[in-house]
Image: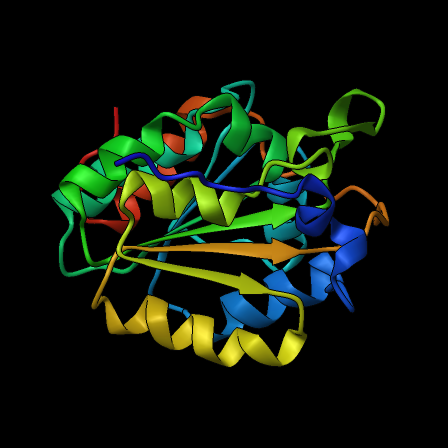
Length: 209
């Protein structure tokens, strides 16, 4: 017996939601509530948002590695099971590495939370509409891969629940945060990849090289 799965792209677009969240406010509020988390950022605006909230020794910024935030964080989560690990990235970067969600679901580290700031646009290349603005629902993709817990956020008040998930380290979690299309002033983190790596290694008690 076959099953027909119906999908209405219009129902998945940001216009169908009642509200969106200010990206800087959400990221700042979340990071303030997860002081011990290891944070991996996607390239571009997500890195600017995290850096604007204040430099942290346990933050690893990715420059020019589009699609690499989730696999880097997955490795960290598996290597550091007692530490909460958070990815903060955008929908465009997540789309580039969408297949890595399958590996996340298979490995299922309970200390890993993936936060996707979704404005439905490719912000770094001219604000072209992204797949999530054209019918793709990232939370549905994550659930389809088998990630244990999937959430959608469109209210700043939800940050308390997301922070509790991060700190609780109880289940692999994917969070799609619906943000507005505003472009705050850029806050550029250090671009020296070796220095960023050594900063994080030192924070974890490892020698630098």
